[in-house]
Length: 102
Image: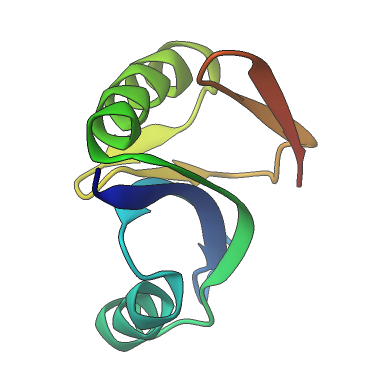
């Protein structure tokens, strides 16, 4: 079974806007380099968990919808949320609820 990672990460824009991202990858180090190159910011992981590919994709979709409803920021393409202030924590539900302290 192919393994992937579901991750939560962030970076700051020059104007101080906090950008929270959820995503999936099969190689965390490579993906972090890609984020730094494409966003031209210091992208940091806050949390990651190894899961099956199907679970990673399903969890990403469900979490994105939940955050869009409850987080209060602006959703932008590529699974990112622009927030005026950094939240203290977010939740990701796979089988249990993971509370990620930011």
